[in-house]
Structure formats: C-alpha cells, structure tokens
Length: 188
Image 1 (spheres, rainbow, N blue to C red):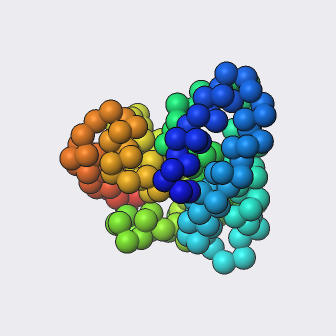
Image 2: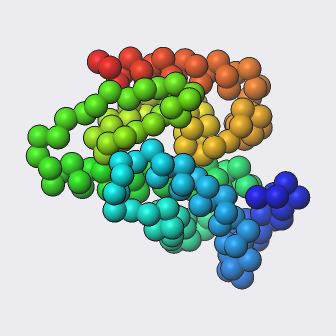
C-alpha cells in the first residue's frame, strides 16, 4: 500500500464504522494488495499442494471482517492486525479439520527465529503454534499480540509500538521473550 493512502484507508475504515457501506466498496481495492501479501506470506509457509490458495484466504478473511455488524477498526494498522488474525484462524481451522481426517498425525518441531518467520510446514505445526499462541495469551496477552502483529500481520516494530501505545524497545523486548516462551512451549 502506498504510504499516502494509509490516511485514506483509516478515513474509509472510520466511515465504514459509522455505517457507510459505500466506504467498503472503495476500501477493498485499496487494501487488496496488502491482504494478498499477508496471505502469500502465510501460504509460502504451508505445505506444497495446500488446498487453500492466497486468493481464497483473502476472500474468506474479508468475508469474516465484512460480516461484522459494527466494525471497530481503529485505523489501517488495526485493520491489518484483524485481517492477519482472521487468516491465521482460517488456516488453523483448515489444519484442525485436516488433522481430524488423518488420525495419528503428530506434531513436528517448529523453528522460531526471525528468518523462519514462524515457518510452519505442516498443518500439525500450525495447530501446535496456535495452541502455543493461545497459551501465551493467557500468560501475557501483550506478548501474544506483538507476535501476531509482527509475524502474522507483517507490522514493523514502530507500527506495533504506535498501535499498542508502547515504546519500540518494549516491542523488541516482548517479542524476544515471546519467542523464547513459544520455543520452550513447542519443544516441551
């Protein structure tokens, strides 16, 4: 998304929040490329031959967001974070369904470093990572949110700091702590 259009996206989100459904028609083409980038990132980390395609993932996430009676998006960053959350939910639901069909499938180790960007090669890994994220949220909700915003939402440290109203150094520290916590959870 072009930097100049970020303010326009926020303006359209606020119009949509106020009940202007026409704002939704203008908004979709503006955010489509960013949502496809997010979906592409998710799908690159999935197994080859995955039955979901990035376009389907974007469409499903968009439908879930559009079904909200009164969207509460506070701006572009919040919108992207919600979209990332829905995409992760969709993939986890898909993975849980596939795992239920394949009895006895076991979890695999997940490499939790920045280069891997939480690379999840198998559906069982995604389910285990989702379980870890839920457990981390019980332990420290802010750390869980930072992981989701950075790795799944593609937000920078600065965007996360602004969105959560905390300092950049706090974002970095919490992210590192969350990575260690999730790595221990996943290897336990």
